[in-house]
Image (cartoon, rainbow, N blue to C red; front, side, top):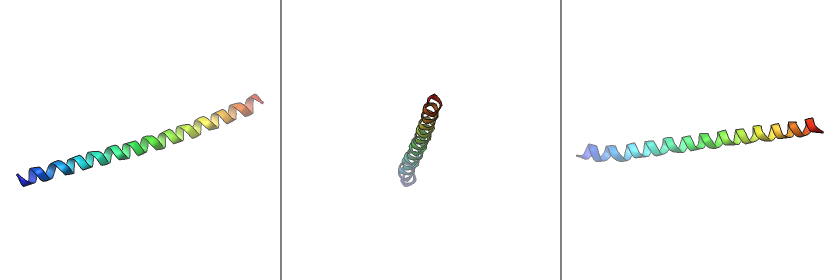
Length: 49
């Protein structure tokens, strides 16, 4: 009984941690994409001038 009750919260905490790291990864990816997009826009502007 005790082991079962102890098992549940640890599993929940690990899943929350994984989702948090995933969110951080997505945020980093979005930032990288944004930077890339800004660079391409700048290049296009330079090309058009």
